[in-house]
Length: 129
Image (tube, helix red, strand yellow):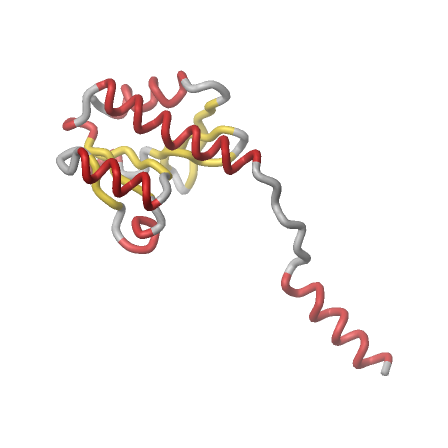
């Protein structure tokens, strides 16, 4: 597999769109990233998974999957070695990342105020008081 295969499969997923983040191709559903080609030059595609999903993929196919270095990797961001993957593995991995993003997109978000909004209120109260 190669970057063109990654792109073709990612864009075949319902609602998937290609965009760009920091100069690299990314793939989004509902406006949020589920995969990128940020490491294409090193022969990798990148998937946004949970740490548990990442561990399962690496445990089953360590020659194909590896965590991205640093905090992103500890949070589930995963490289897929494109040359070592076949179509079924690549499609399954992209589908997993896509489905996870869809699930996250449909979860209700809390409506917290920005951190500074309460500070402005406190400062105003001090001035008034």
